[in-house]
Image (tube, rainbow, N blue to C red; front, top):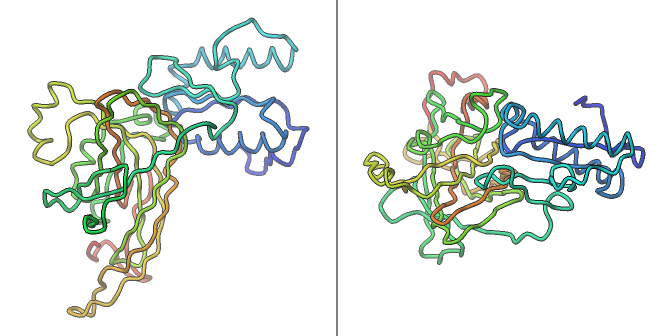
Length: 332
């Protein structure tokens, strides 16, 4: 929309607005911000409706076009023609916030009075390295590990070979939406932390945030945090020897939400090689990973990826000082 359009400044004169998006829509965050602005402007969540489907920008328009059109016409009937509706029990045409659940049966929605959804129970996970000697694989655990079990994970980011990106918010029908992450998670420049399998169905809905303590030998670097769901392995997944060699749990990993932030570090001069910088002291990096709504089935897991590029969606960081030639310099 027009960047000069300040919905909140309209106050109670803000007209009734129906917002539609997808969990992998490139405009999802803007849509959620607009919903909050309209609620603040009108002083209540009446006269506004938010519908989020399980898909990307073009994917939702292509697969749910009729549903979207029906919802729009119902909205016009209610607010322009002043009709009372046709008695439909479709939540996308009746509830204030309607969130389609990824991984559920088709057209299954969770209904709420506002966003972020009230009445949910926060979930917290802590990162811990695994004991098999890997420097980039870890686990997500529900309780903070003892101090003597706290360790660190490590990866090397090379701007010559930036970490690629798959799925999510592309303006491309063939690329947006949830995509398999296997080729990315097997790279040496990606940290992969996986939770234990859930034992019963679980819906996760709301805003995902990550708090990471990181150090870097560059003065500035990008940090990508990506939440994925790993579906319960099928029998054929158990035969994947390549996946077992990599140390990853079997099962299809699909991206749910992600974000990228640019972080400044304070690397130290190396004592052995003064011309090079050694890793900085750990810095707190907070990432607003993004909104999601997903159903976990028995055997499913959550997974966190951490890396320093999402190429080509985000321009790779060159990791060079002013005047340097990053295409010639080394990696960090």
